[in-house]
Length: 243
Length: 326
Image 1 (tube, rainbow over the protein chains, first blue to last red):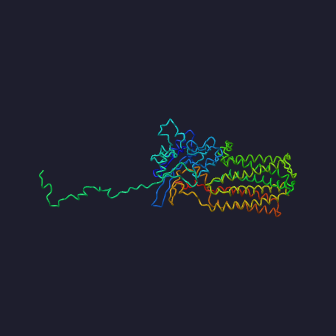
Image 2 (cartoon, rainbow over the protein chains, first blue to last red):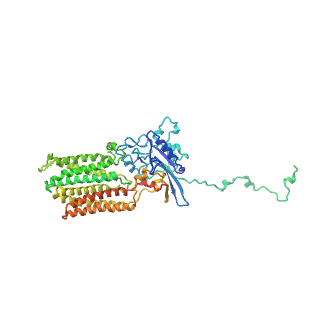
Image 3 (cartoon, each protein chain N blue to C red):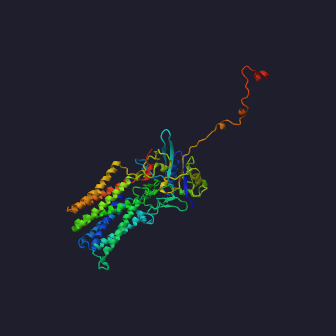
């Protein structure tokens, strides 16, 4: 069974928000209708987004690190938001594991948002239905796009390739390998939601250089010692030859 | 969580309606068993059922104001296999229909004897509707309570005490309402209802007090460390990613001062439990019927404060992600 997911590399994310704007652009122009902003140019403006990039400071000054943390629906394998939905609008697709909301069935009761520990769902207060990340379901299967572009808009936009997309149930996929080999982890594992999206941790890259790597161990200068150098006053080559 | 007026009204009005109906069925069952005089409250059952139905309808109307798309509310009966909200949507109209039949049987007098028990006792239509309605009333209490109790990471709600509170607080307010109605329509029966109102109010205080103690001792399971998966004891949010408001910053926090939340707790403890219990006891000790009218008015206001606190107290783990704007 397929479970599509994102794997986000926190070691690489620079917090540029390109995924946020790209997501908003694609999904507000998509077939599911706009992602409106209320009072966009007024006071108390509010917007609906599928994806946010947050920033955290880890540690105490001066030993601190900045972690940029992209946050969207994790497409849990056991999504708590799905069984609570009274209408069946909130559902998890069998064929690819994407958690979706049927905007034509949603009654806007907000119960699914209460049932999501990650705050991944946002009520669209103009269409008055619940909205969430679709993993760009209207893009990844679009046969009119070249195959390399059949990826979520956020993945296409990321300038540092911090976002990987693929099937985490296929052990040989890029995302499975990244999770397996680079310590991929889920968020809030304590609730048993089994998020499909994983995060790759920050990693310290250290290069260890030994002294014999800086200077060749087999340098003939070291083997033969210093070439004899004439003292001052001794005849030089110039004294011995005439040009 | 942000307390929504629609949900506060929905749960308090439904609870009072269910409790009022249960009070009538309790009295009728006592009369059926011969413990009470069957004639004492004949003029009370019908009007009380009408008031109960009005309370339930008020709750139903309030619930529509909670929905973004009320015109699609009919769809919400679909997922009863998994969703307690869906189950509530099914049980509520079934219960209202039963209350209607019960009230109609008493008000119109069309109340034929359906079964005659071996001992000779006659079971009439209203008794059958009453027992069926009582089962549905409890089912509705369980559905309402489980809507909140089933959300495991809202730990203030994820407890059997939540269901017990919905049952006991609804029953307490219903019996207090029944006592106030009886004082007007069947004064001889008012002490019966006032006595049970006192018992259920005290039981409700016990159960609600237990959940307050339990919730005060809760320690968060999710932390910023598990939320972003960084194992360092010191993590501080620098930016939540946007400066505007959003659903996430609005829906999951009450937005009031901590002092207001604290005072709401004492307000509801006094208004929903202490004062109504004292007034019911005062009536039992020979006080005037006006005490019971005051008791139900104060108790309903107190229960609305209780429901406000119930939401305000619940701390959603998603708030971990929204601690600093920029």
